[in-house]
Length: 167
Length: 431
Image 1 (cartoon, each protein chain N blue to C red):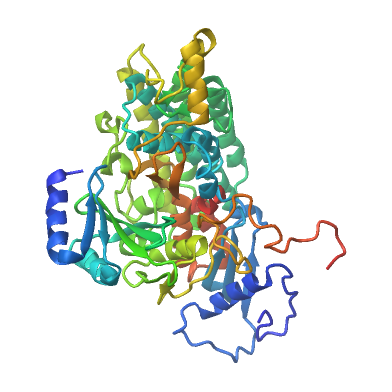
Image 2: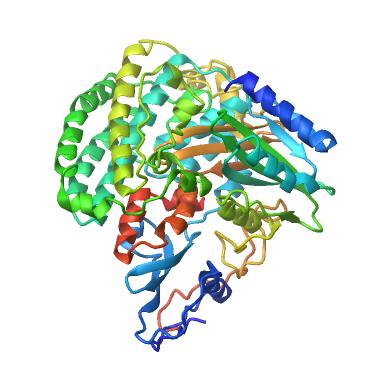
């Protein structure tokens, strides 16, 4: 990782985002940037088209378990040309956990957004196919939220009969 | 919903009704711009369900395909049959306690998963690892890469119709199991790496076994190249099958050899060298065709490169030295200390009970090049011994996502070959 290139990129982002860049963390070499929720779409377009972050590796959801801005969604982007990784964060309210989708920039966001939806219940507006990815649709809880018990909720899923002839 | 316009009656799935309906509906909705031909007098269109219990899907992968004759017009994947919620479990375990779970993610290369977790935790806790331990890790990681690729080779060629190859690759894998048995004490789920180093040093027998393996393995590999590279049936079966370009490959987020087969030399070992890979001399094999044959060549060459890396590791490895950090606050003390000193026992207890506590509020990401692609751990710490959030970036997940796109327009008979070529492991993908 070239520190000089990284700092140049960060300078560009700082100029573009201005006040809306809320936080910047460079402690562990990979930059972690937090931006305002409203500018997400804007920032993604800029990162992809201007700064060449063409590879979306994953989308991470986290539950901060605070009363304000409870959820955090982190976009893990890679610029192959500059050999840089970037983590872009936005925070979401608990009452209205909705974010604009980024599938229009990166196709690979599809499953990743579905995973975040499945685990945290954050909805992505404009996603082409927002279904649960690991758990069945019949399941009504979001398991990676902190209030979900480790042992699960008994009876939350109908289980198949273990004996035959019960069709 | 399940009765399509053909008059074949189908039994409706009984369980998870909402889930099934949503899945079938999603299949119908895919590429909504394509006009659906309802006339279809010859009833060539059908919906085919494959899996989750299908021997060629490498685990519990379910593929839903809409066919027009023999061509897959569109397909949807249903994953999650092996979802065990290990990210949730991680939040309730100490870092070291979580490690045996990583063995069960990509169960074909457990050592890489252990190392990936250890490196991520060591990064967030700011730990320096002894050199010899790093070399041991590198050697074992490369062995597990060979082991994983061997299984891919056997099953992929079995999917393509040749059964005996499976036995030959498993004979080699058996040697690797023996090596891991000697190194770690387990054949399969090794859990040998520790946060702060490794559990135990190579025994002379283990070292001899590894040296013997890397001496003999290149000849085996050469033999396989001989039998496959110019094999008419094999080449016809794989050439141009499941092809994808590099632009599309990046867009759908392929990982590992599947991405490198499209022409993108994205290998974490060179992209962002970890451990001591920057001191090694090796090549990142790439192809530009992006089809199954290209993936085959990439993986085969990778195995040869792995052997080269192991050879260099043995050359450069310090003959003696510590294999774990000598700081009982950060890593387990050695068993000698535990059994013969009071402090050692206390530290051992504290490590098991509380574990390593990275600084509060720290968050970091570390990735390694696992056999199947980029395997990364994103850790958020709240200052306790348990991670606040641990996200696993698994290569099989990325590759399976690509499969939905790759399969569009392929022949239905090629499905298993394409799945075999991508080499997904459901334990890895479903977490």
